[in-house]
Image (cartoon, rainbow, N blue to C red; front, side):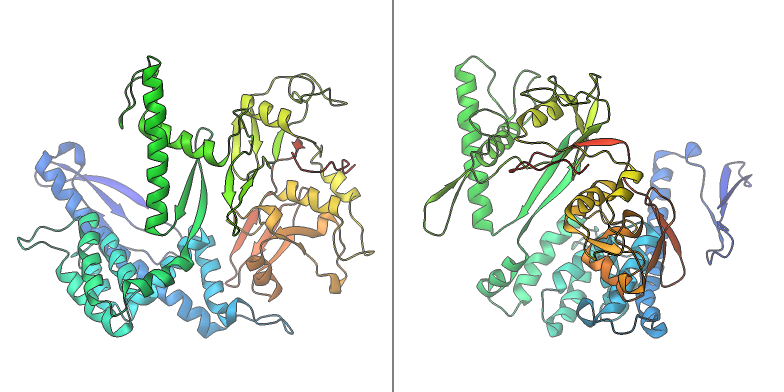
Length: 494
């Protein structure tokens, strides 16, 4: 993309963008907009509206192209390995399209799958919605709201719903509704048009319930849950009650009362008290740190104590504190006394040293694994066995960290060891011929759609997609020591 500046008749500098971004790109043309620094506030808003229009048009073209990707892959029918069972419920084309889009656009596979599904609907049954995006009448956010609500309706109602929903993107006076306003409006429309009772729909929706973990910066995370309304409301109200009681006790001790907004650096808000109440009920114990004293009630009505135990994998650098300063109860042979700033919590990432020390001190047992390629080779068993021994699998978990497919972040311990050169083709059960793959990407490799080779002793992989695109994935950082708090002692793998 080349940007050139020129002066117009009114002597206002205008940037001209010539879209010739790379060789072979189908994108061509020139777009010109006034330079923002010369604009009045009203003119600047006009540019914002114009760029929204441009983005809407480009979004529509992108969605049409996404819909075509899956169609073309189906028509071209990539060659699959013979004698392989049918995978992905017979919808291998969709799985291949998802993998190609996610790697080419650097998206998660969930986002890529949703984009492909949305594009397919918009290009066919919901073409009116796509045209409204293309002409700039609605945004992509409005279109996705229509799709989300229409999907839960029978086909005969979905078309009518979309037509009426498009009319409700604006108020009676012509003002365009924000996505939040629009979502609330069309939810009521959906309820009116849905032929099923809310009882039947709730029973079906419960199959989508779940809990999700998302890593956040600065040693924090987001834990979210999709539950029935009455359960979620009861949980929130219970935590809110605990929070208000704790706030009242704090106030009685002379601390400032909590509020829903930040009061001061020496007080907690009600939101913070709710978070603390949740952590205490489910995770913290009487010791105040990783006690696992939460309670659950089983089917017999009896409480099950100790439901949550501290089962984490902690990794700290080689040569960092592993002796009496970190691990309670004695020194670790061969460790050096050196300070460290961060360690790594498996499934999350870097954590502070103080938390790492407490986790390590609470570990009932530990095992040390130097991540070294030579060590990995020594753990191999060649052609004497197909399945990797436990010590080799442990090494692969630490070396790979996650599924080794481009962009996949599924943790290694839920993945399967894959022979790069298949066992039946003479491949060995060694670290240099093994990689951890999740079931989905293992299947994509097994049917011959995707292929890879190990390009370095450290375990780097070079992948090739069915469309001939190349990607490289790297092994996790090497040269680390792993502390694994576990329930039963295990000997070190060396």
